[in-house]
Image 1 (cartoon, helix red, strand yellow):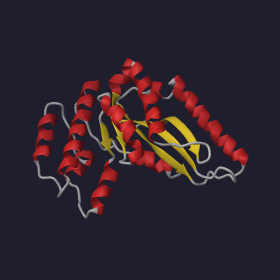
Image 2: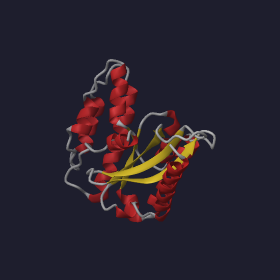
Image 3: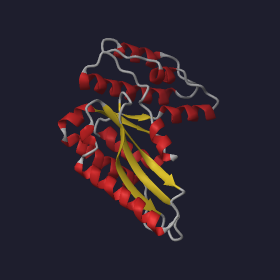
Amino acid sequence: MGMHSVTRTLSYVSGKEEAMKKGSALSEINEPFFITFDEYHLPLLQHRVFTDWRVLVVAFTTLSGSNYRVIYVRPMCTGLGVLGGDEIKEGVREVAHYIFDVPKLKKMFLGAVADNCPANNLAKDYLLGLGIPVLYDHEHLCGRFAMKSLRDVRLRWVYEDAAFRKASYKAVMTQLRSAPALDGQAAEYSVQLERIESFLDRAFAATDPSKVRLRKVNARLFESVGKV
């Protein structure tokens, strides 16, 4: 890729950074939402000097899945710096800071979804410290179970089939916690179910819906964009 293409790409990224600072994308949110964050690797963005490009991306998705938007990007390549845990935390912190400064957004903010990459841990701990639940992306979790020849049923039902209602979701979560866990996964289940319940607490407090489904609460779209 030539320097002109690199320059155009960085110009686009700078524009996204400015949009985040102005809050233009987040201001469009009128329903409950969650954020996703991770690094995108850009093997096609090549130049003879800088060859390993990565971009930290934070995006929001509404609970219904009707609106998805990238709201923060930060590019980095080898030779210029490191895109690691501190940088990911700072990007997530900036997004969270803006959300918490706007009462409507703070009320609608349900939580975050991320994979289990160690580089994300500081950002996840930061959000958890604010009382924001961070869910382990279910597809990544299923992949981890599959590597151990385990097949998850309980969490799959939660994310794909369940329709939670305000009057009964607490009892449903209690039943889920009391059910037998996959071999050796009791601690993992306990953490995930606790965070899912916290996510549901915030969802029912945000708009008092008749029911809540979690079918769109994943990083599927986020990951697909990163593969383009």
